[in-house]
Image (tube, rainbow, N blue to C red):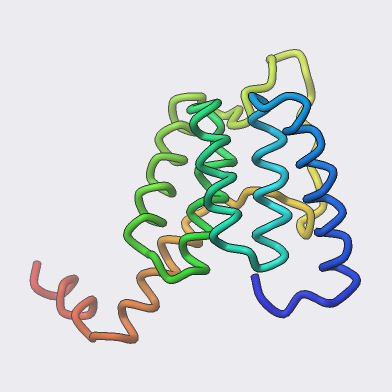
Length: 148
């Protein structure tokens, strides 16, 4: 994510500091790593975000939001091969968990958040973005559909 305003960068800096404090006290806190990664991604620190998403995945391999976030960070960085791998893994985990991707117990209502605050997108947006960029690079995608 590029072009963040100065106040939003300050907010992200505070969030990073808060998450870092939590991580210092409990180093095995996957949600803290995920939240710090989100703040780093929004601030534009893609390498830091990828490192934190990776640590969150290491601590909780079923954390769908971490795979999706790392896919977004890889996409922002231009590393589409890793982005597609993470987006695919997020899709697989979501399918495995069924209609409840956050893993909430059945009796707990999942509150929806405002679109701007959504921390994971899980749509085909990453794959579509990749396809559009590849299509711009070469016209091969047009011929693939017609050859069958």
